[in-house]
Structures are given as structure tokens and as C-alpha cells.
Image (cartoon, rainbow, N blue to C red; front, top):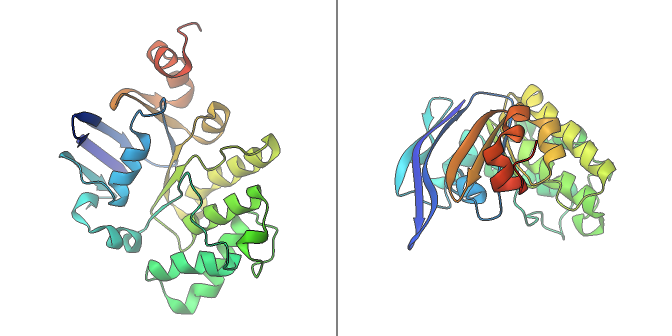
Length: 237
């Protein structure tokens, strides 16, 4: 469970998150909204890259904002980014192993944990293949393997399937749906693809200009007139 209360972020005169309060219980949860709504800012707060002006975040009973950023990885926070973070010159195995090492997980289980993560995401490339040699869809799966290695507690996915064709997006969705069962991690998905959000997320929250305008079961939220006006551009059902 993650509990957010009164979270506020300001950059100069711009309020990127405005008194955001919500609770995500478990499973895979969606966070949607127009460009600039504050979604990535929220992830950056959780990751320790941005310090909020006010508010609290408790994850599984722990004060997440009270941890320095590097300890959050050791605690069990993982994330993907809109831009790829894998190192092209390194192999698939070494890229995933870097995250395992950074999280200070047991070296005795490292090889198994890394290979398990690669297998879990359905990456067909050899673990010894250089990331630079992989196609776009396979590279995205490397990013996902880096996010799930070592049984994380909280997985943040920032547009993991952006630009992928339908069949690769469907595969990505099937993997994302299994993350909570595979690792017991709470997973938060940010994406503009409503079919992906609908396929993966039991609960979805919506941000608009930094304010939370809706949260609840995904199907109900996507039918909310405020959401359609703000995000989908229409109030018609």
C-alpha cells in the first residue's frame, strides 16, 4: 500500500502537484492525465529526484520521503523512464545485474535473480547480447527486467510501451499484469494508451494541472465526465 497525503510540488511560480492525496492499495494501479499534469513529477518525488514543498508518502508503512534517494532502491523501489536507461555497450545480463548490485541484494543469488527477471519479461534475446544490437521492443523488455529484478516492493512504470506496435504492447501488458503476483510489488503505471491502462490496472487515478480529479476502479474513472473533458477531450459517453 502507498498512502499519499497533501503532496505539493512547486517549481518557481508553477505548482506541479497541488495537495495530492490518494491511496493505492495493491496490484497494478494507473496514473493518467494530459501532458504536464504532474505524473512524472510524482514519480520523481517517489524516486527522490524532487523534494516536495509539503506532504507525506508512506509505502508499506515506511516513510518514503524520509529516505535518502539511494536507500529507496535498497528498500525496494524500482522504476522505468520515458528515455531508455540501459547501457548499450553492456550485455542484457550486465544491465539487469547493475540494478541488482545497486540495490545491495545478495551476491549469492545475483545470477539466478537476473536470469529469472529476464525470463519473466519474456526477453528472447540471449542474456549475453549487447543492448545496442536489440530491436526497440526487446530494449523495452530489458528496461522492464531492470525494474522487476530482486523482488521489489514498489515498481513505477513511465510509459513502458510508448511507440510499440500492438502485438508488443499486448505482450508488455501481460507481463505488467503479472508483476504483483510475481514479486508482491505494488505497481504504478503511467501511460497515455488507455487500452494498456484498462488491460493492466484495477484502479486508476487522474491528474490535471497537478490536481487529482478522479480515482477509483479503472472502467468507472474512464467514464467520468471530468476525466473525458480533461484528458480525452470530450464529455460524451
